[in-house]
Length: 307
View 1: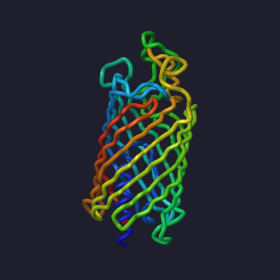
View 2: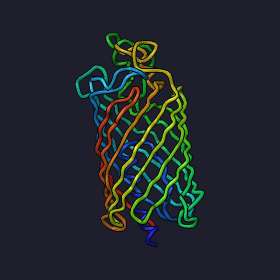
View 3: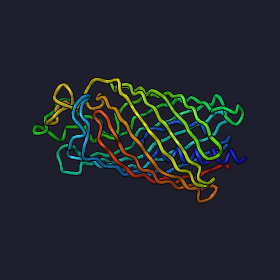
């Protein structure tokens, strides 16, 4: 029972860290008990005034700047001792911080991510590490992802799509990953996830990895550290045509841009009651390719049901 309480606290902290750093529902080996689960509301505010452009280009370099506010809703539910469902969706608004017309303001529903996790090995039974696999489906949100074609800003800026202010890539897809994790001495928990994400509409495949560390200060307080890296297989960079470049030309190619990301996040989750948890997390983009140097602060409120 004690170990189960620790794992529940870690799982809640993991959800909070993921939601504060990404719209994607990354996996965890610490699953809710059958018939129980969590419902989490997360608010994230992030901004950037610099970005990395191209695979070997200079960076980060100053640009007009972006700010983004997102509200996410996440749910997990335990089907059995070894199987759990998860879903994540929200609403986001992105706007320029230094005027228009480029980049333009946009908002909309985020991508819907629905997944199932199957735990193959349970550390409480084997005495080793917990091992799981996760498969998820991605359904594109209703935001503007890119323009309809090569349109110059001075020609008809109203026809230019969201471009760099797009909330996502505007494409359906799927992702699969393998996850391993273990709790050490009721105080430290470590986990790692390795996966791949594939989408339609010419969006390049992304391979990603998460490394998580959790310090169980008390059964009610968990501090977390996460390192995330994403590597794109694409070869389209932001720049002069044929890539999305200056003066708004070829903005329809933005979903095909290769985006690499290296990010770190830190934070903590507090169990206020047996059913209510609150969390605060901060993250910073450290390096990348065709990505902004975002720093963000997020807060979460989680309700645990079926306990």
